[in-house]
Length: 110
Image (cartoon, helix red, strand yellow):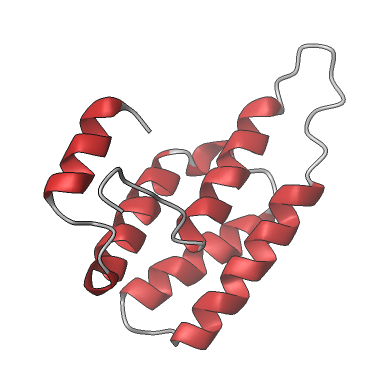
């Protein structure tokens, strides 16, 4: 996380429990910016699940299942077998989805 975002997160008290939805929405927005790099439909489904949760169409229990699945998928992703390494963006995007679903953001004020 860059310094400006760290400072903003601290000023907004984003680590407070009551701001979980805002953190998830931020993670979702970030992951959506990298969605075009995703290669695995299962990862795309996890990201869609986060969107459903934010829209009120999925439960917290479903969110936890999406998060677990995204983490599993990210940790088993092998990346590109191509010599040019073009699959590395897909690996990073997959981890972005897993981190967004895990509400995996920490700010200095925590």
